[in-house]
Length: 212
View 1 (cartoon, rainbow, N blue to C red):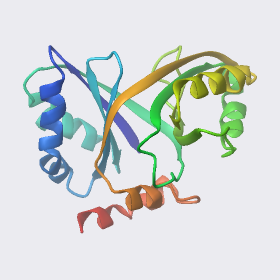
View 2: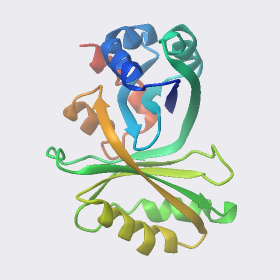
View 3: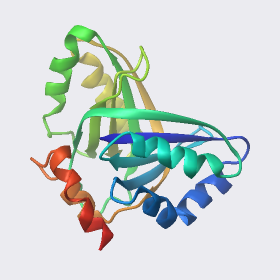
View 4: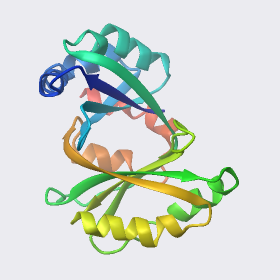
């Protein structure tokens, strides 16, 4: 299971962001063999940090929040988003020049399955790479979320307007630029995670490789 823990800062986010990174090993240790921290991101214009993690069972999320994250000085709120049927994609090694974006979409209930199937197509316009997509159902207005790497923002906006927004059943879309990202696994580990045909259930048994 993939969870996103969004940590809202009371004032300046910088100290919370830095503290999560500083305590990364401690946070990972507290999970024991129940999960793996994946990466930390910040959406542009939002005073929050989003911690992505893979867990074998949901109680591990609440344990990490109550025992660790909630005690960081300056935290004013915590929001958890669950990813359902996530699909991850391998990435080229050199992506440091690409910008990252998160897109959310409201999809008519009767079109959920069809839209998901259309997104399975890995072919993308030049300058775009899929990172992941999944159902979230965390708002009535947002039930699908996915992440893209792009050479520039105009490329993303054109794809969303010309492709995603025109899929039957897609009622609304939003684009959120990502200001910064801190990975907690290596590139090779991500490639194994996103490997075609590796299910989340199977990946549960791969967690041991991150302890080496």
